[in-house]
Length: 159
Image 1 (cartoon, rainbow, N blue to C red):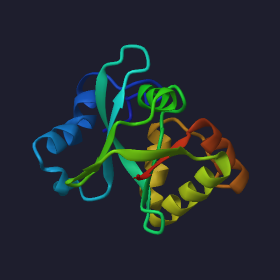
Image 2: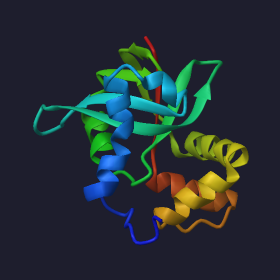
Image 3: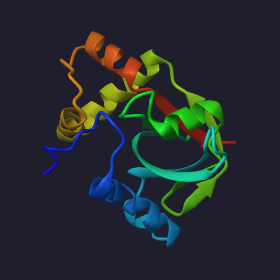
Image 4: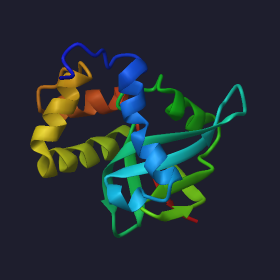
């Protein structure tokens, strides 16, 4: 189904609409249907100052720190990621819970460790996502570190 879609650039058309279905579910107070697999990030445009809402898959919910970790799968050039680097997220929503987050950019080593755990929990999903995004990755620790250098992660906790 996704074979012709190019994940190396921002999604457009039907695929963009499909990716934003979760945002509509959140808007209509149906975020509980998504469980803890997605987070809705409300952020401000770095140039426009406009408010945006972007649904992103949760890589890991760290129950010790109560942080939700997400990954910029399209890389550092993702608009939502660049906006968060310029200005921290305004709100984060998981399920029906919403809060003003404490935001932290993960270093490459921690991101690689988090992704290794994601791979262990969701091996088929990880493999498919990476293939769809055109990411070449050999499964090694060095390969994972190199990949995470291109696909940064952000953690959102409670203040």
